[in-house]
Amino acid sequence: MTAGIVGVHGIGKYDYYVKAGGSAAGAATAMRLKWDRYLNASLGGPARAYISEVAYFSHLLRDPAPAARAAALEAARHEVLAGWARNLGFGEHLTGALRSFTAWVLSRLDSRSAAFAELFAPEVAAYLTDPGRRARVRGVVADTIRRNRPKVVIAHSLGSVITYETFWAHPDLEADLLITLGSPLGMRDVVFERLLPAPINGRGERPKGVRRWVNIADAHDIAAIPPALAGCFTGVDAEELVNLDWIDFHTAEKYLGCPALGSHLRPFVR
Image (cartoon, rainbow, N blue to C red; front, side, top):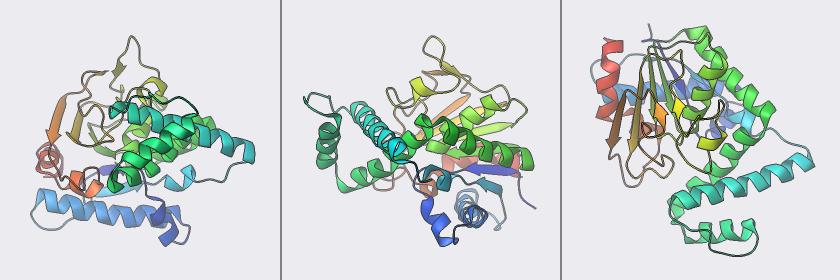
């Protein structure tokens, strides 16, 4: 028997879909097994199933688009990358095309950060700038939560943005605990101002169907800028700033295996 947890994954998970032979259900199953393994490492004790299901959506962010839409998505990708770079402290001081600026930024990042940016920018842009795709992805997450009726939802990376919007878009959904991991929800010029519903007077709010919200972020995670969310969202009940790994600063494995997560989950998995 599972512990009643639904997971919502982050960026860069299209390979699960490919390895599952183009099956979203197969990708979700493979990811669930991995997340359970990571949580067992964090919580200790006998091996058990914690995750009821992982909402899998990465394939929906890779749908082929008509040429005109593809050009618009490419422009949006550069805008996201530029906004993310400004959050890292790269001032947009270059004159010329946005494409030139983003190429300049990528050339100055180390290999890990550049690889992250090449995943983060297109997937975030695809989600935030395509209303139809946005609705389909939120629908997958809503259906997964509705089907499993979990006590806990754990959302990583871009998945935290999608989950936040999904709870607002589907007011029938409920969870006792939402845990966001490495969340870019508060990232200015990229995510925060584009959220649905839009923040009011510079602040978002915990979705009505969520009874408790815990945010966990590595202080050096280049997706979680700012790492603490209470400064821009009302209703964040607890924040944990952790030091995961200077190399694996954003992976689900490191977040799901960190002791800070276990302390919030244990009341729900005993």
